[in-house]
Amino acid sequence: MSQGGYFRHAEAVMGTVVSFLLGEDGLPFEKVLSATEAAAAELHRLDEIFSLYREESPMTRYRDGSLSEEELPSEIPVVLALCRQVREETGGYFDPWALPGGLDPSGLVKGWAVERAGALLEAAGIAAGLVNGGGDMIAFGRPLGEKRWRVGIRHPWREEGLACVVDLEPGSSLATSGRYERGEHLVNPRPGPPARRTASASVIGPSLARADAYATALSVAREPLRLSGMLPTGYESYLVFEDGAEEATRGFPFSSSVSDGDDPTEKAITET
Image (cartoon, rainbow, N blue to C red; front, side, top):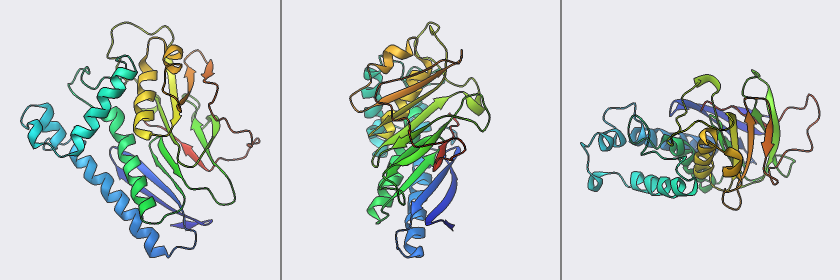
């Protein structure tokens, strides 16, 4: 659907809805539509590989031991290698191997998949856009008439309300993790209660896959502020605690151009 110079599409996939907001920039409608369909098809293909809700997916079969490492599609070793790196960086607060049901990399996979979908759109000639997969979002190119994308981060307990609005630079990513609709589904892979309970954690940085995993780790970390300070260079975080307090790293890009009643370009409404 075209609206206001943008092409919009919503695709139900990977247990959420992935929304596409793409600048048409004079491209033929058929080209924009074809690129969007290819990106959506890639998301479905990756879902078939990684979904643990599909009994015959390679990820499910690998987890239950019926598929060997040598038989895996190439995407799984790539994702697991990245999971190992992030596990080390987060001190084990992101650890797909330590979850109660067994190996589960879904705390990184959705962001990784959305990132790949965005790369396909850019390769197809789409100059600018946002791809938002349930709060995991990439931005590329510049929005119409603006230098940056304005994105609203949903408040964890004020329905339809925003915790803040941020300015996303082209080439940056935003991931938000929290309880929201799915409630208490986040699992701490390390024993011990948190010093402060985190209601939502948002991370902005160059890689959506990493931002996705870091946000998951911050949501369950015993000392989330300490972990925030340990994130790699280029990543910034914003935390909302259950006592109502908010904390952000110094470089978190809060928007200074939004007035009361002014809607952001897109809302990063998370489901995770």
